[in-house]
Length: 126
Image (cartoon, rainbow, N blue to C red; front, side, top):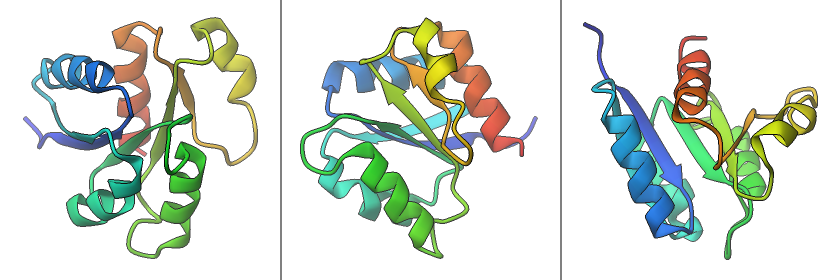
């Protein structure tokens, strides 16, 4: 069996973080570190060097898109895939919104667990 996929999750919703951590680690294939303080995101991601960063888009402090831009601009973190997570869109709206060229994929917080896991697997197997 291969090594675990390491994930850093940034979301201002503590309950959402704990639920996602439980779901993802429940696969036995993923290890999740999270913070609810978006201002700490860049330091944590640079320190952990995860296989993927999952970013809530709309947060107090540093916005998820700004975090992704900063990661892409930093040679140390530029190769870390980003997956956006948002409670502001329904699963049905995600497919229309996430078609921009070069944009990180987007998953609705309301999406089934399998869809999130599939997106993580797709981004980390590239």
